[in-house]
Image 1 (spheres, rainbow, N blue to C red):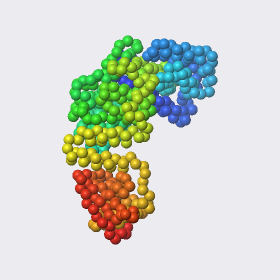
Image 2: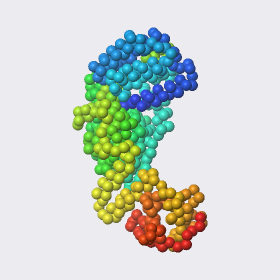
Image 3: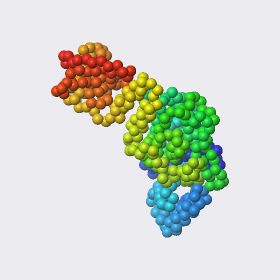
Image 4: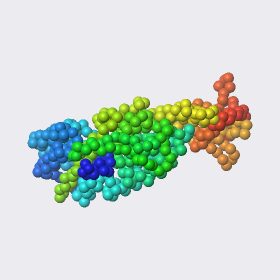
Length: 455
């Protein structure tokens, strides 16, 4: 892919995609001893020279590219790549030597069968049939969408698809979230992708907004990324926005996160990201027996506000917590922000209800069967029984039983229904003697305990 073609397409082809290709090739190794073919000394020398020349002529940092090339040539001259017993190990050795100089997490090399090699400029574009098929199988990167209690949207994106392919899905997703009061975007498993970043960001601003720039070595030009003038559907420009990150968040996902952080539009929650700010082009050496492909970082991201990027350092979170705690933390913060913005008592009551119930969603602690057995019984017209598998049920009648889920000690809600709860209360001796029904609207009614129910 040429640098200019890269700029036009806004392609952030990422190392994780390359690693997927490497993984697929490794699977092929196990399935067939014929691929990759054994490479003799001349073939290894040719590949090492090609990789050195590619880095020297294309790598974004000229000085680093020349040092990578010199290192490869020195290693080849010293016979480091002469062992012809394992072609995969040979290519891994070249990659490791490149990384030892650059520490650039986008650098990658892999083998392709000649019949499977992509044509020039087609990787990760609508012309790449394998990429298109994979995007469709993975719903264009959209893994999960949910409206959490308190009208907080949750969106997990595992890949940023090419905008020409994933645009319709993006519009549908963002319109689904268009009436939320706050939004959490989960990028903890996102390794990057192609050019969807400006379109999604467009929903968070009321006018075109400059994101991150890209400087391209081959032309010396700087390409600016802007949000579109118009996006279909309601704006989300004024709602609290949170982005979840981990050390697996990479490349285009970091581009998205870095831009929104420094524009002051999002709060970043989680762990520091992986640190890949160099977009790539993919170059190939085609031989009759095998094709060698390399991801060569040929450009660099530059934020117009900071003058730098996340390359090598990652994006630092605003709220630094374990990645496993990021959703819980962001959700609590989102509800806290909404509580501060509440305009009347009814709205505050709904948000406080959602916040008090958030424990059920994130708590891994479950009451023991002995503890659950304390609640089984009849409370006026309310009957609670403990099923044989240890699930507490609210039994409305002989044909209608509803599983309960724990919110906190002595506090439960009907599974899948967050607008109604039961609080079991205790007497001065610690014995459960009544149940209190609670509603999101502030309803409160007590029922004394009667004769225990028999399951």
